[in-house]
Image (cartoon, rainbow, N blue to C red; front, side, top):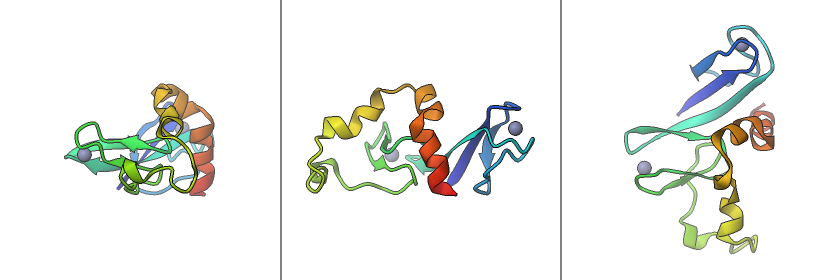
Length: 109
Ligand SMILES: [Zn+2]
Ligand SMILES: [Zn+2]
């Protein structure tokens, strides 16, 4: 599993080895990070709660963990799949700049 980091301050962008809490280049805390898993031989970014491989439709959570098949979803929470997947309607920019990304940063501390 790789980690992706982009910095708002110096525009650094790329894969990093460690779960940096600040930009490895300019030390700014104004960064966005997400984990990147490899699926079907390609990098799959996981900025949202649910991130789906376009090829095999495997779902990964924000931590890069494989999620249970969708027909098992919602049993405990009562959420519909539409509600769970609502995040997919966000653009990548919204995900990277929005509350999901901020919460992700906190969760990884
Ligand atoms: Zn930076
Ligand atoms: Zn896949």
